[in-house]
Amino acid sequence: MAAALALAAPACIRAEESFEAEPSLDAAAIVQPALLSAPNASVAPLATVHGYMARFELTTPFGPLPAESVELLAIRQAEVPAIEVLERASRSGAFAHALGERFKKTGKSVWQVVSHPIGTMTRLPAGVARYFRKQLQRWSGRAQSLSDRAAREWGAEGDPFRKPLAPMSAARAPRPGEAAPETDKPWYGSLGKEIGREARRQLDYGKMRREMARHLGVDPSSSNPLLRERLDTLAWAAVAGNISGGAALDAVGGAAAEVIAISGQLNSLVWELDEENLRERNLQRLTRWCSDEFAVRQFLRRGGFSDSLRTALADELDMLQPARGCNDLVEIGAGTRSELEARYLVNALRLLQHHGAQRGELSVVGAALVWRGPDGRLLLPLPLDWLSWTADMAEFFTAPQFRIEDKTVLIGGDASAAAQRALAARGWHIQLRASYPGAPAYAADLSQGLTQPEAPAPTPLCVGDVAETAACL
Image (cartoon, rainbow, N blue to C red):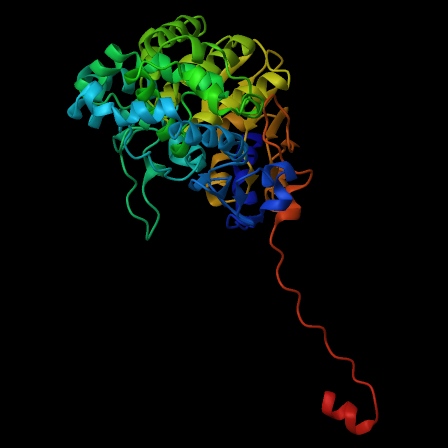
């Protein structure tokens, strides 16, 4: 009878619940003022929440710039000064001459490849919303064998997560009225043509690019299209013109080193090591905690992670020291499609580590991470901007792994009143705006940013003589 009641309780709760749409929030009320007042960048007054992340639109002198979360808003704002430096450098003497001579230096065919090595960025299908789809729960333990089998059969081009029954495919279907999402690989995962790879090796492009990124204090793997395009172009120009990138940037002045602090402790390895050596170093670090070396190698070359974010994930695992669960983590990581999803996993580990999780066990519910301590305590990290109580979220919280007493949900941002009530009814301890190193710069109370419905017009008072009162009524 007790077991039957336990199973029936979630159904009773769901029957009494109502679900809500994700809101628009007042940007000035959900982030700290510094994020809205950066030089040469203005932020649209409203942020739309999609996939539990607040999406902002920035206007810069170099073009519009989207930011798909509060964290990415801070990073994009801090990258604007670096874009300004690169823009000025492109018009300076040394770089201008090198750019003018580029066809003579490399040949027209090679330059066409290397000056535009990046295709369109992968579209975000639904923010991080897909982590909470019910369909994913049934496949949590089967992702590893599926990936191994598919990757060995198809080689590097195989993508088991595109198959109809794969763990993450169900939530990637377009919404009604939306076009199907593009299936291009993330820009930093594309290998490009052989001529481009050979030119990169011969011209030492990667080393120059990392040198310039380090001088500016930016992530060399940044997905910022305005920064990326300029960094690519000037790195090639510096190589072709035999210019020291750092010296050339010194000549125009300025830097954006504060981006390092805002984006959360970039490991210096991302500037020091080339792509292959960095991957080999991360392989060694990850296999301390993961028993499946093949899964780790797949993670290091697939998914929405840049090499910088893979390094960050390895950093967090070294601090968390999980007793098990690393194989599941890298399997989920290999199935991500975007920087937003990759940052979600890294920040989930940061939340756990900062709130006392260590040497416990990581596990996967759907495609979300859960930590279980030796004492049975469960921590669920949700590094989200705004948690609305949607039907998907309600289904996610019916997972049998959550049917224990001592459980805490760590929400990076805030949650609606409906979400808080629903979680409390399910026995969760709730921590809002849970801090961790490099956490987004949220305002003290994000709920103040909710758009308020218009108040009804006040009922007029009927005063005066008999005729005036009768007319009023």
